[in-house]
Amino acid sequence: MAAVKPDRSAERTNLSARRDFRWYWLGQTVSVMGQQVAIFLFPTIAIVLFHASSLGVGLLNAASTAPYPLLALFAGVAMDRRRRRPAMMGSTAGTMLALAAIPLAAAAGVLGMAELCVAALAAGSFGVLYDVANQSHLPTLLPRHMLPRANARLEVSTSLAMLGAPALGGLLGQFLSGTTALAVVAATFAIPVLTLISLRTPEPPAPPREPGASMFAEMREGVAALWRHPLLRPATLAAVVRNLGNAAGSTVLLLFAYRTLGLPPGTVGMLFTLVGLGGVGGAWMADRLLARFGLGTTLIAACASGAVWAVAPLALWLPAVPTLVVVGASASVWVPVWNATITTLRQSVTRPELLGRVHATSRTINFCAMPLGALLGGAAADVLGNAMGPKAGTGWALVLTAVASSAATVVLLRSELRLVREIPGGTSEAAA
Image (cartoon, rainbow, N blue to C red; front, side, top):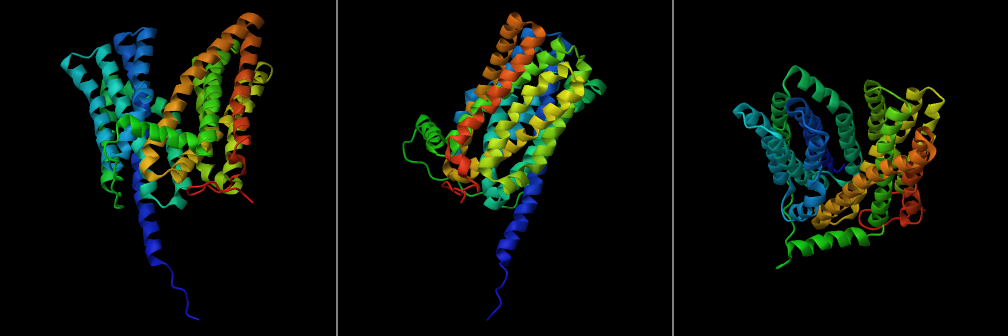
């Protein structure tokens, strides 16, 4: 019997994909770090340079976050109509120009709060385009079996950026002026553009559009594709519940740390940094957890992890900071696991011509849930604090937000997702 020859073409394809992904990962890491540092520097400039009021800082932050719920659905349609890689390069260059406009305006003596808000709005808008194109492009760069690990590695970059950006932004703002620091950040966005140019894997052309299809009709098609899918619909509903609870919990935790425990700002900052280390670890293990426990179990565990915040009030009697670090790190481990797993699921079960719209729909829903959750968390802390006193009120508010976050497990347990082990390639695949 003749020996079976190894598939050299598949091996070469995998090697090329790994090489391209390393460049892609580098560009994504620099991009997400730059975005997070810029998010820190914008309000810093407003406060230090213009002595902005709380309302002014709030408006500035709103300008940077408003583009997602306003533009994401339109961006999803746009990214399904064309190649995504040129769109990523263009949106990265747009972000660079938006950030560079601040030091240029400062040098010209025309920088004010209005200009800061316009630049934040522009940078946020280009960020929406980049995000939708990025999530939609990855399946065309890598074979499907590489997506779980790739998404996990991208979550490592996001977790590290969330952890290190405030410190890096603070150092840049301290040793340089805030506007000069933004110029440095703007220059770094040349790196993602260069890494995208260096990719060798050809991107397939965009699928042909139906003649006469309107943008709103295509948008509705993307929403319907997500809502009708037996796996994506419960995953999205669970994400909404989870994000509501987590956003509420983050708000109440700050109130609990400052007002109930009386911790100083420096200690609270250190606390959140230590908690964030759990997220870095979770991102690094995300693909391994998925391979070991399967899709349904991994997602259910990630949702159930919100319940640990119910024991956070023990910090009233135990050493406060160590207690909150243990509780927070235990919960934050599962945040990137959820993000990487859901992204891989969405990329695997969605037809390529719909991926931009489905991703944009999911992200829009989730981004709308987070500010609502923060509002509900603050309201719960106020109502319970007035009724039970500050200590008991914020403690019970934390318990309620933990229950709300972990309630997402109910959505998953009532769906087909609880039975799915392997991420399917287009249809649900129940575990035996």
